[in-house]
View (cartoon, rainbow, N blue to C red):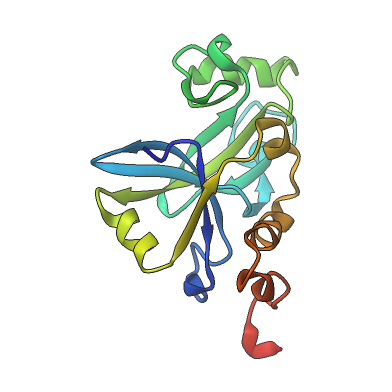
Length: 181
C-alpha cells in the first residue's frame, strides 16, 4: 500500500504541534492502519542522554505522538540485524536491539547507517486516506536511502515544498508563523 512513501504536511497542518511542517516516512501500511516516523524534527538531546552505555552523540528525532517514551530506529543494516523489517531493498526498521546496542558500544555502527526516534506517527484504517482527501498531506515517493540519511532535517520540508512546485512554492519560504510576515 503506502510503505516506503513520504507524507509531506501541507499548510493545512499549520498550528498542529505534532505535524506542522513534517515529512514522514511510512514504514508500515496495512488495511488496519499506517505507521511512520517524522524525519525532520530533531530533538534537543542525543541518544546517549536517553540510552545508558552509549557514548556516541547520535541525533535523536521526534518520530510522532504515539508511544513518545519508546525508542524506534531506521537503519541500513539489513538482515545483519535480526528481526529487521524491510521498508525497501536497503532501508529497514527495528530488529535485534541488543545487537544494535553492541554495535553502538563497539563503534561499528555510525550515524550514517541508523537514525533514532522517540515515538511514531500512526493512523487507524481509513484515517490517512481521509486526511489526504482533505489535503492535509501530499504523498510522494521516498528519497533514495543514501540521500535520506544525508538530507539536512531542517531543510527537508522546505525542499519537499519546492519539489511539489505550483502553489506549494509560496509556502516553501513562508515563516513558521505566517502572521509574523
